[in-house]
Length: 329
Picture 1 (tube, rainbow, N blue to C red):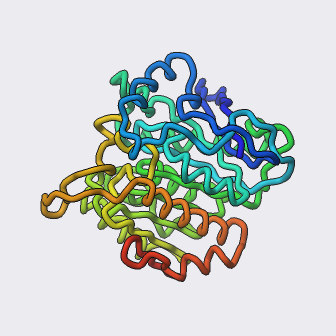
Picture 2: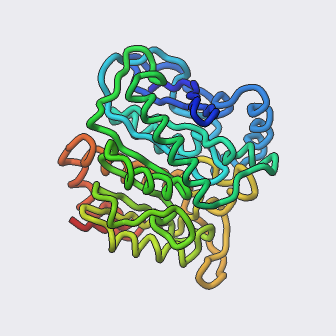
């Protein structure tokens, strides 16, 4: 697969967003390094974090070849919206799995709400206003994808096959966009409820497309209350709906940045259970990524591509003790 960095500018908001695009290629090339996602000042800020991060928690390489020629064709699209103070490439392993199954994945940095804003102490507050900004970012990015502006040469989007994936506040963002934009045909949120009492202005009853949800059982970022809301979201969602519970996963276990900073540490290595404070070890990040990637790929294959095999995998509940899947149809 290939990967390239570009950008979009929303003139109406005077807002420019770095964008990453992952896409199929005809000939395998040399995998790129994670540091190559960034340039200039951001590259300089990222380098020492990667150097210090534990290898078992934070990937240093990717499976994608930078700036490789694309395999010409029309493709289904999945947009990814990242977690609070994260990056457009935070879950690149999950994204790469989607691309390996024929999707093009596009993600933008939500400027003002990135890792680099957090490092500078200038990050936006968690609020409805932040979700407003993020929703507009995703919808502008989708506009440009459908116009072909950010895609590599020879690649066009199939307008009827558009999925949306989000992590943490990205899950709330994904729910908001899915609620308000009829172009999205399937949405999956990871490690946060789409509808919650704090912010987002999302109501599950207003999302009338297939919904996937992921819960990390030891997610001390949203806590037991947040996980209870994910369960409530699943029960209230219009069908079909799917929920994956990854046992002993933390908030960052489903990304490739667990341990990149102290704030992203819960999710890899040793921790304390949020229920009783007992020490335990988080599920290996590689396993959590594999569960997540398989779940997401099956969900989008089933509901964006219409492939029965994806739905059959979800219904089979392949990891009943490690990562059980619940289905409402």
